[in-house]
Length: 322
Image 1 (cartoon, rainbow, N blue to C red):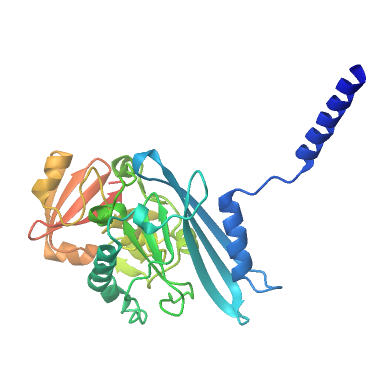
Image 2: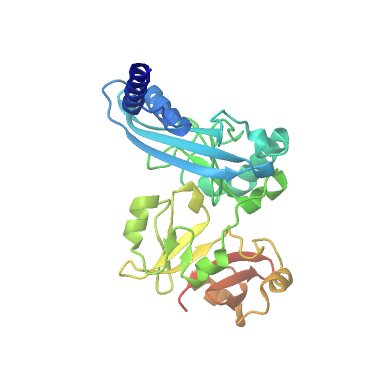
């Protein structure tokens, strides 16, 4: 009996050692990235890869993983190209999920996106590139993060001047009527109080920001500095104002939500949500031209200022140290 027990113990120890030495299975997201990279990269080509994983809360306490892989380099018959692939996986099983887990009606979503891009995106893009092929908005490469949803285009349909493949980003509040889920809520008011607007911050080096997020257009002269716009899709509608030394002194956004207040609301609606401003003033036509604003009104809160047009419609939020 003792010999039998000793033999069994030896077998268990050997099996335990074998299990310990056996390679562990890759996580579903790591496996997906590896497979996609291999499929997108020609043999012998070294391509740059960017991986973004985001845990997206679904209904009934479930979680999905939003995966986004961007590969760039000489991957298109020896020429530069940038390709993005995206997937949505079940957070527990790793099984693929459809967009119908996030959006209530995909046909309604398509109509909404096409109208949105036609009315709010194309006119701005036409000044610097041919955007004739933006419709319909593609739904086969969609990624999610804390700021919103990005719809990625193949480069042959939409490409920035940098050569990067195009994409259109919508903030969560812009998609509110299309969603089945409660979107993530960023504390924009706290960010503003800290001198931040998303990933941008006051006092930063504008050249470093342009290196990281790309330049959309040539900078425009403004009172006491220059206005810069960024190529990164999530920063559409965002401007950084920098002084002659290249230090960021103010940040503006035409797409934001702060305490439920977002562009298009009236000053009365904003005050009901935010309270009475610390100060308010009229933005006259001459001042507006120098500041690259519309004539109208402004209301200052702790850390940020809201700008309205002459009809009292909310247009911009500005974060500054003033």
